[in-house]
Length: 327
Image (cartoon, rainbow, N blue to C red; front, side, top):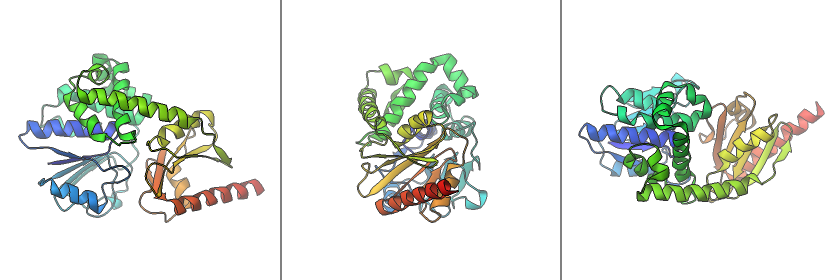
């Protein structure tokens, strides 16, 4: 079985649960995650999955689009918002069909697997994904509350930051996070364990933290309700930078754009302290920017576009600001 996953704390924790379950049921797990700047919908990644020889693909936390994903039978588990009419063409699709603030892909994966595989000792993996996606709001979830009682909230949070560092690193060494989770008996093993994978995660975390500190010092340019931060970093840190600035600019929509993550493209994240539909705000500016634009959640969105498309987005943000100033 190919286990395809998004390289953040939620997707990687869901992948670890799936790998444990697949192996306990007597099958072979072939984990795959897209390369830096790529996604599961690219033909090159589809060829990689096909080359594993897997009889089934389990796809975790990568978002969803209409149409066929892979040539082999596919199960998608994902908690991102999708309308039922826009469901992908797969054998099975597990979704909340809405922005459920109380769950994550790792939690959905655990609920699916618990009746058929011995994953209960690894329930803390679901808690990592919940904390990674929902932050402190996840503490109310029963899986997080139970894991915090057993392992401590500090250890869980530290594990989340270590797993996230792998996918955010300049090297995009995402696979090492999955290896570390598969080797760990408890979340504290990531921060204090002696294995090579855990040690690599700790080194990556230091690199990403230094890059994030540097990027947060870049001052935003304010255009009406928007605050735009332009970065040139090989690290996938535009999301944390945008989130950090929402605390300083609570009345603005913060857009952090990174021109240095992959050549010729701009990766950007949009966040707001206010309860706004950020996907709708982006789509109103550029309605036909493609499937990698205004993806994710209503409150945490972004995109991957060519430099010319992003420059047009900036012009429209400035135009909106000018119209609002006149009004």
